[in-house]
Amino acid sequence: MFPITPRHNPRLSESLIFFFIIVGLISYFIIGLETVPHIPILLGILLLIAYGIIRRISFKSLEGAMIAGASSGMGAIFLFFLIGVLISSWMISGTVPALINTGFSLISGTWFYGIVFATTAIIGVSLGSSLTTTATVGVAFIGIASAMDASLVITAGAIVSGAFFGDKMSPLSDTTSLASNIVGVDLFEHIKHISLTTIPAFIISFIIYVILSPDQTASPQNVLEYQDALLSTNLISWTSWIPLLILVCCTIFKLSGFISLAISSLSATVLAWVVNDFSWSEIWSIWFNGYVGRTSFEPVNELLTKGGISSMFFTISLVLLALGFGGLLFVTGIIPSILSSFQEKLRKIRSIIISTAATAIGINVLIGEQYLSILLTGETYKGIYEKAGLPNKVLSRTLEDAGTVINPLVPWSVCGVFIADVLGVAVLDYLPFAFFCLLSPIITILFGGRKVSSK
Figure 1 (cartoon, helix red, strand yellow):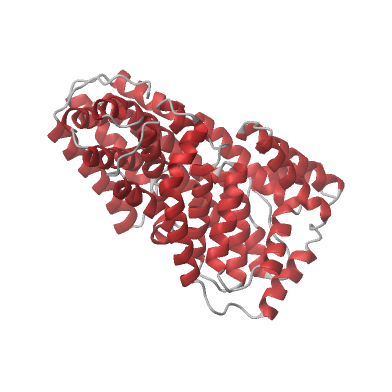
Figure 2 (cartoon, rainbow, N blue to C red):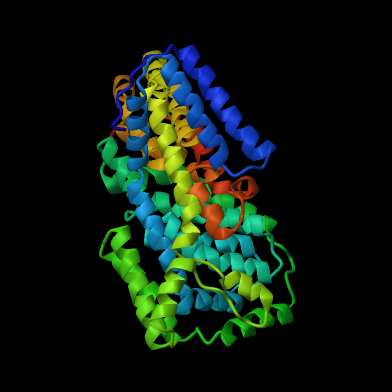
């Protein structure tokens, strides 16, 4: 659970009023005024501090809650630093350029979005990490879409959908392990059960992406210009595939995401020095500032100019603000009072599943953190499912269907901010096309009324 004790016990009506005020404030600034999410989140923090002081919560308690909230995301923050390094090191080792160049050779306009979705899903299951999949293969697909004159927003939606299919279905995924462990369900029993809703969502999404795929894309000459420019970097060779293979091997041996990214980044860095003749001073600069493309073809320069620790600062600063904001929502009692009200009023199976999904979605919207959406919702509803005679695997499935996959659809969430930054496509732009993520909670609610065996 979130390690923050509420210092106030507001009425449900009061909590709901603040919920709608806060969501309205954030939505107005991001959608209406088109500001960066940092501004409304910071204003929300100031609003909650004022509310807490009015309710006689000491500033020391409020400050402690912000720090505790921000501290809960430190694991993700250190991972973001490494992903910034991974992208830049994969650029100079030729891994990302090789992926893009190979993609041009294999992918045509026919079924393009469907192929992007399916390929990203397969790699997502293999790696067990939606963020790593998006930051590597996703970046390559965005480049291919740009060269083929395909829609970047639909491509981004397909990438996000495929990556989070992998995040749900992979036994290597931390969210999959968390959802099963928090309610005491065997990992593979959990994966088997979520396939009942995940496979239909996958099939429907794939069909939609195939239908949306363009009949014709860019001319072969346009694609050839991209390939020639990629080859002119002199970064691509057979050794460019080694960092990717190392990353896959690390996941097979179930090393942690942090260790896997570190090993792959270091191997890519050594290859950049040995094979591609980068000096160590250049390498360390690229680690921090990212790689800058310098070909004679500007679209490829824009495609390759990515990565670096500094590229993650926007994401990290927003994550810290959002999680500190979440800490204040707990210490003021706003979220606890809403969660406790659900526990008292739910009786029917359909309403229990709908409320579980709504809670997981609501926590994603308010706090922007998928792990907390799974943890808090799971802890809140375990007793309710037991009283209703529902097996725990139904709860773990709903946590994944409405918790894991919703996070990338929230503009100020940990995943949403990261993906928008890496792919260069705003969350609100790709959101309508992330069909798998949109369908998953709908299908789990429709499916939820069916009787499920506890065996």
